[in-house]
Length: 466
Image (spheres, rainbow, N blue to C red):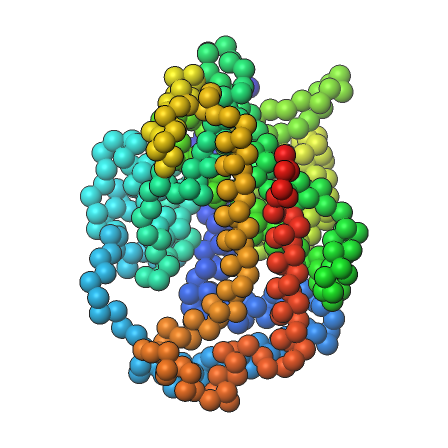
């Protein structure tokens, strides 16, 4: 079977990919253009349509949002003449002023010209250069061709500083745990050790979060809410749990991907992600195979159409907030069109004994560890698991606690000193755009209490937990 695409097929595939990525670019563009409140109102309407909010609650939230928007614009007008202008010697490594959200840059060389930097010559240097661009802006490479679609452009405050992952305890723990799993694999016909898995399974095999995360039942969460006197309706609790898991899974995947990239940069592994199709052969045996490039595009289109059918612009959100409905739609489509059962994202990690024999101190911050993963003890493995989990739990708790403070900071950055902000009357600030209404404040605090509970019950490892 010839799986190669013609030039016209590749062109059409690129156009479809641009269309899919355009949803993300459009959302980011609206945020940058100050349409955050309008997007929030649309989300409230969706929550009402899904039955998660009553009509009264939806109307209250929309009214509060409208009131905050008017106040936000009023405050900006009042203090626009006192905007904080950067006066220090901050040096921009890339000139992103020539980029626009949603634009397509045809080649790497064109992108470097727009950023006013010299392109790299070698393949590995170019790959590292492309990865470094992500500190200043977000992009997606087109599957066919050499183009880049710009998804978002960061402001100065959002630029990610350079960091050496070799000096990051958070990532180094994962690097060792990943290599431990690879080292335990049998050798393939080429003498390499190959681990076939998925991102969720890799997380599970490393045992870095509480098993409750993957096996918790709703009745157990309900009992925990009751025990902690958290008064949320079942629908609201379900929404908060889905939102929490959406953010947690992105955090898991990003940290694991960062660890994999670092290991690959150190020439210790090679890894690849791909789509796997499950189907039955003529004898009724369950089979798995890797999707072809053309099938990848078809799968993306089916997921996007299912998301739009459920009222979402991105399949990521539909798969989390309406998971059962989303799965039913795409699986029905797969069976009808292709006679497939389901699809999932696979992850392949390959290494060899020579690379795995590298001392830990050569690629981590553990400078006292002059031995390889083959000699890592069970005690050290468990220590690394708990250290990673502690960092993760503390990070999630801090993020929840700072959610309200972040809203305050959005206004604070407009003023030269804190005293300017504190001297404003409550009538002007309305508690930093957070409604004074006691019910609304209680609802916000209750949601935060529930998120803290989810961290401790679903993420935090219990002492001695394997």
